Amino acid sequence: MDLPPFKPYANRSGQSGVPAYALLPSSILLRFADDRYIYLYDDVEPGAADVEAMHERAEAGSGLATYVNQHVRNRYHARFDPPG
Image (cartoon, rainbow, N blue to C red; front, side, top):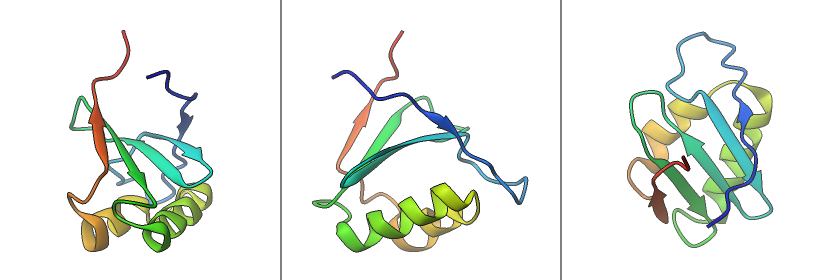
């Protein structure tokens, strides 16, 4: 799978565990600082409402990791090894 380019997460609190993300129309890919994998969250898992909330927080640069920890946890659609 070819992955889209990732954007650095703004991390306005300075304490986020998410260094980078990539937005797709109905999904989001996340990298976590303490994990080597890339996680896909989409309209199937965890669902469209959660993905929309994650999109908003990613673009705002605030609250993304907290949202994942409090609402999504391990409900991701797929996990990938990073390229290279």
